[in-house]
Image (tube, rainbow, N blue to C red; front, side, top):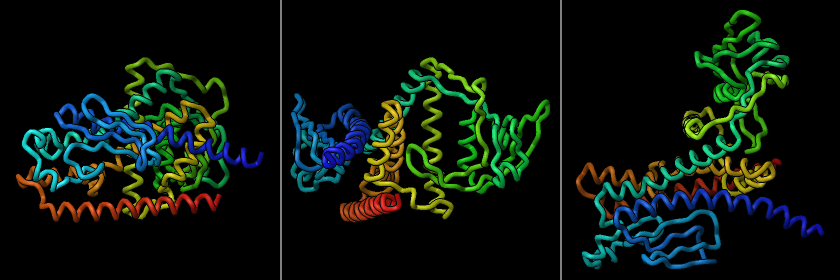
Length: 376
């Protein structure tokens, strides 16, 4: 029985992880695939996962669709590519007749190649917006009025003079309509003084509070964020569910997507400036753990995680490192400026450096995952 329970627990993490990652990877690669076909490029293979094939079929245009054994990514291999990373096969290209060259990836003008490469990350952002739209439209948006119920002793809110019953109206000039609005501003402003206007009785009071960085547990793992030390209202009258139409849902989803992009960008910027810690970088083990935890909450929560992961993968792929989509776009920018591509030797060197950097990041992220597991 113990073994069966252990297997069940493992499946509870692995299955949600594969589900979430496969959705994100499929749409990323679908972006490359659709724009590639639109540009007239022959697609040799579309793979979800790496390694030995589990299932495969060939469509009427000669593309081999495959599901592979290792579900940690995927690729689209265009005609003329040496591999799924769109590294050119120089020998094949040199002996390729003109009729085939026209339908190869590297036989395309630079604008087409750039569009095909950029389509992957763009598809990730579109997927996130679509998922968020579905969630908002189906569930509406919960709004808790930003009224303070409790103030923790010795924390930033008490030191600033915030009192129970205060209604938070604005922070740094930005109107606050809900408790979630307040949390987002405060959590992203650790150790930064904030100008807060609260409504106290019949008058507005201006205060200055500096959120303290604290580690909190969320459905998506532990995060270090700014906290004021205030508790939300528990009055049912302060809580409502706002139903959204399709247009409002799309608008809300675009805002949600932009918020995730903004916070991710701020975190990466904080890494370089030394304000953020690298212990928040996660790899496949941590993502699998989070997927399992979120799956217990429900399907909507798991889809929400897929949207967040889709945005993250889209942003990572736009980093200008050779091997990633952003590295290819950097090469094409040089080619557009110079009027000719970089030398084969320079591109090969760049791909080797990119592979080393991506490999090092994966090793570091996995080490972080193992370290977090041992701490837990």
